[in-house]
Image 1 (cartoon, rainbow over the protein chains, first blue to last red):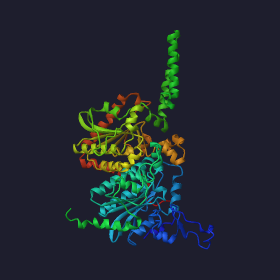
Image 2 (image 1 turned 135 degrees about the vertical axis):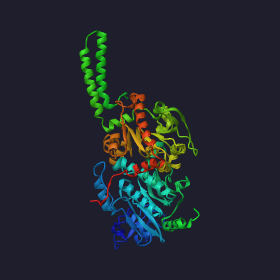
Image 3 (image 1 turned 120 degrees about the horizontal axis):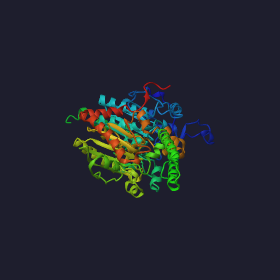
Length: 289
Length: 321
């Protein structure tokens, strides 16, 4: 429906091919390099693999729009609360300029999109955070959009699925951003008490105040491979405890080992996995409840 | 380190001068009583001026004062027969967060709070008042227990934050905090939170989903420490003074932002001057809060708390631009 309003800005490196002698004839952006294993792919193939490197399986940034596109049934997405916009409650210098710059860069109005759609015909409410917008940080608008989405799902009795990607609270909104943790958790509590399914998919990165609120409160907690997930920043922990941390510290794989996750699901299998979980929670089939 | 805060310097200097005169009067038998009384007048004015013009950073310094009363200091004066209850039943007992049952003006209440140490030795035991997940899980256990027995819950918030450590992450610091927010949202007994020192981020909020949030006049409550904010925003942690201003972290700021419900006065320059007097001031506000909620039904208590948090935040309900 409305998803074409988003721009195509990507976080992974696009190789500037005009500098390369051998492929001088190939136009800009047609090849994409994995910044982990350095292999170069045809961008079209890379995108068909949902920005997952076919060689090293690194799950690269994917925009909220692209996620909607590959997860939901075609033309099933209807956005919610697109009119909500950010103000500058603490009168922070340059805050609105930064918001405007990211709006232009990403084509998004804020760091989360919410709406409803279907997967294999099964309805759901969905929220997708986009780390390209202010690092996915949670201010008043992000908190309000997620809260409203949860209440809509509660009213409609449809499952709520959220893809988290956030550096944490939005510094420029101070205590109000901290309070969004409480606000969203209150909403999740009501969703829970109404018996509605809530699935969290933690993607890279999910940290700070977001990981310590709605992102950790799912009935089912999934994560993408390699995603950074944690409360405190790695550098702060290393400074505090005075030792280097293991390479895989705070990755999805590390969290699974620590018992903090239900499963790690590769991006290519996400739609099928969500479809299955939605089927297993169809309300008419739990008549004995 | 001098045993006064930087903003107190002119007061301390004037006080020293007054005692010098007094000493001279005694030693040399010269009458300086007129000068002394003039200086004392000036001192009164100066004190009034200094204490009514504290900057946010001055308040941060007061909140961090080494003698600032801790949770257990207030527990001693506010409650009778406090019995500390230990452990989360899963992993261990976190000394950075204490809890138990006590009488408040004759009625049983559950008391929970982060606990700093009062000196280095004690701070090592208390982990500087920075809890691990087991601390938050102990708090939750005691809150559910309070709910079962219809006891009001009084929490004291006094932490730089949840502990940023390896073990804390392994045991699910995020989940422990999130679960407290989630479960506190559903409690059917009144929860009164009192921010007594520094309220640092999610580690503070994990005891802070309350029906009423009280803040001591010089307490702070913030998404990040002034030093952390300065490092993040301007890549310069020495700009903490500026950040303390910009982040709006004082009790007055939070009152104006609609987060804090009441500010509790402190005796200048701060609560450390007299913990007993300060405890009395806190007791008055707790008593009023408990009275206000005593006539409410469990469902009303729960709704009041939920609606309070659902209103938090400022935004515009129309497109940007």
